Length: 159
Ligand code: HEC
Image 1 (cartoon, helix red, strand yellow):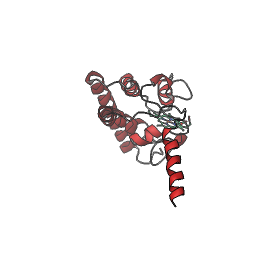
Image 2: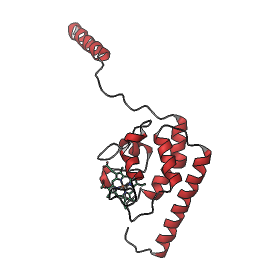
Image 3: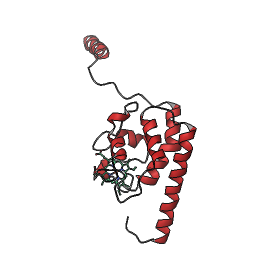
């Protein structure tokens, strides 16, 4: 009993001091980043992405209906905060509207410049300034309202 306990504790010590050469884990989001996400980013995803990336459909194995799901990614990682230029999600959003891979897909209402800028700032780890947050939120509200009207006009339209 004594010996095995001793062995166990030395193994634990080795495990504790050994640092594998793995990439640094993503830093947890700050409270301000979480607030920006809730206020500006999640509503964009709700209005433009969750119909295909949420509880009903999980295209590309990706859900964007919560912060946790967004950070988890789909078949591929979405983004690492602070590295906007190597983000797969951003690159698909910023593609030319004629590109086959653009998100949301060509047939859907595109994101506005302000919405894209807000997304870029967030992924870049920058605070979303009020001058940007306000018009981005307004664009999102307009898109959500338009989508609601469209579904009222055509209740049987297949989504
Ligand atoms: C009409 C449905 C639809 C909407 C709306 C939509 N997507 Fe997609 N998305 C897809 C489909 C289908 C795929 C899987 C095929 C592919 O990768 O092109 C996909 C794949 C993706 C991927 C790649 C996932 C992976 O891990 O490979 C990302 C990132 C993405 N979408 C982001 C978005 C974002 C951000 C929005 C909203 C701004 C959005 N999508 C809106 C249909 C949609």
